[in-house]
Image (cartoon, one colour):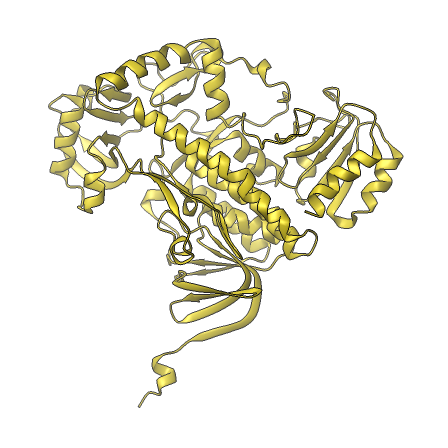
Length: 519
């Protein structure tokens, strides 16, 4: 006869982790890497036993990486691990333009399916983006990203437990007790990176405010008997949108208020064909439906990203339509921002006040992305008002100023954290300064430390840097292009905390550093 203990087995780990992360997607994995880089003990709980899925592979798992993400991977020496972008440059080029494009025809991205061309972009507008900067956009896929980040996390000592999703948690003083089926774990902090249906968000009582969907989106792998009846590329029609780019890869949007997605019904071949015929206004025939998934443009955001010792990041904190592919980049930006701050608090190198800047910096970025998504939906609706707006945006995006504006938003170059400080570089990503010895500042950021970059060799600054111990490293190099700067204080995530064009002032530099180290 089995004992009660055997029937209700509960495994308790006595070890108290610094941080437990719910979710082993790219956001959770990248956050874990940042924490482990700073010597924090990290446990990831992932409900799925097998990380593999057809929806993470091309073309379903294809994702566009924007400039801030690419810079973050480069600064951690991870960009070299990605290979897909070397073979797939422009996944949504239509057959009418062909794969071999001359420079003036290069597509740079799109807003609601309205494409802008790279030749129209005025790169000189971005004064602090040097020729040594990384690419503004690259193609990857979820599977590639997760494999790379998993390998990195495990090499740094992160513990990943698959098949153990978070089912409940409780905060108690200075600790969080996390329940996963019949096992419990303890940590000092908990971060929910567990997607749009986040258990951390639901259990933690976070408000998830926003707007309801306008459409049901379909991502399908099909066999089409007569694809020549469809226009290649992205097509906004009087009844919806369809995108046919990769062979047998079809995306559709049906403005049904999200009803089909909410119904939970499976997508059948008959339903897909009826929908495609209606949206395309053709008698095209689908002979086989291999894979289909639905989604919507529901746009919601947690009103706060923190509840005491619990944080949200990625889709757990915000969801929106995947138009323009900004969701992944937004989540990875959350991870990069929170990682070094939480690590500094865990290691007693900063006060908990520093953690308030996560909400202050990332929540407004999320608001902007959600509104960007809503704006695209607004001009894709099958009604006269939307068509009028679409026509105006199309004209604007084909101007030099318009293309530059949209490029800055879509590529993420305009991303910055608003500060009241004097120098315009503060709050922006640090330029990838090239030094006279052939190195670059991005290559010196692999350890995730603060950097005091001194172009003038000021001995007072070098002495000042030693006061912060292993938190801050002093770098004196002469750059090929200094942009008139004398000193730059760089955060672990690569954003500028302070900059000066004057001869370095020890007191001002100390005040700028203390603002972050003692927050």
